[in-house]
Image 1 (spheres, helix red, strand yellow):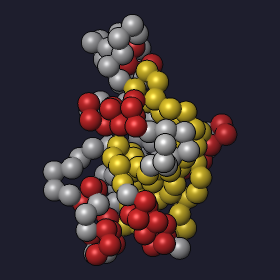
Image 2 (tube, helix red, strand yellow):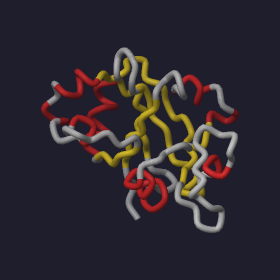
Image 3 (tube, helix red, strand yellow):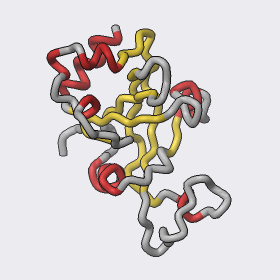
Image 4 (cartoon, helix red, strand yellow):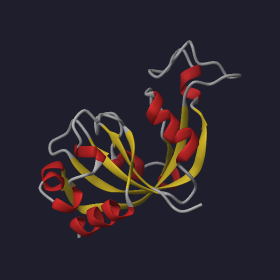
Length: 155
């Protein structure tokens, strides 16, 4: 199976790349995704060793701020089973979970975050799902070329 590339979004007030940096082993579970298409990516398609761009949404500026790697493939999102958790979903059952997550490990924090405006103005990124009208997914696939162009822009 060939390596895939992804983009995940998080609001920095909820969970930032600095929060990830401060986690034990700079690794965290990517929980709380409550969109079925994004869930399917987490459950079925994200694999060990895939590369992930970390995007700060609802921030100033909106920007890709670093890179992570998938270090554990999709498994049930246990936060959905906890009534005290913000991500609780009473319809999700342990014997038939509705929601999934993966584990991500920090690879790099960009010295130069790549802003949404820079992405929109780069002709090589004109087809990137992030800038497509109506695409609000918090987990989305990207191409290897898009990934490499973002890395180049961050240098």
